[in-house]
Length: 229
Image 1 (cartoon, rainbow, N blue to C red):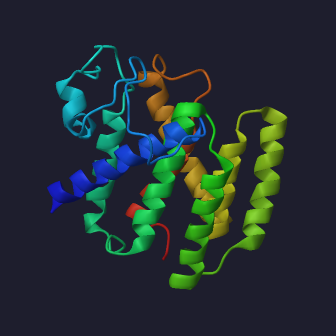
Image 2 (cartoon, helix red, strand yellow):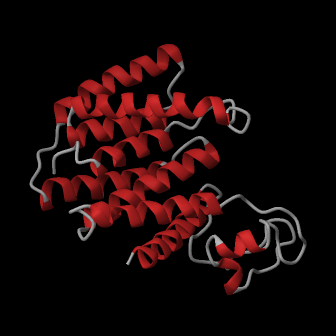
């Protein structure tokens, strides 16, 4: 079961990577076929197998031998994220999969472009809110969202330490789970950032993408059942 879930998660992660790359240039996630960005040769179906094919070809195009985007670590993370949910009561419910999918998409967008597109974020937020309120009958913390929005956006405009996407993501968490959980997520994300910055500072861009840390912190809180559902 672990292997099957890992494969499914890596395939979904590969598809979301494609969506994140194409939506920023106004493309479709379904058409045309994937091509090499260097020689524009259409890739064959076995060139799209997550992780295995990229490692086998040493992250290079089969045709022109030029380096391709480093996607297999992200696909591995997606597979591990899906497989790790096996021990959760939420695993067989749509909320866990949709939450993981949307948060993974937001994280990949921030890693690639240091921004998240408004339309996918609004769609993902709306779906999460509807499931949270309609399926689980949990209240939406509107006052917490408004209060946190005022704090985070003011802090970001004064210090320029947060991006607009970071603030949007934090406000969503405060609206779903309350401002107390939102502050825990922020503290957890800052701790993860500090722990990983020193060994990875040579490979990180000057503007650190923070949404991956926020998404990891939120899913970590769900994983350890710190967020009541």
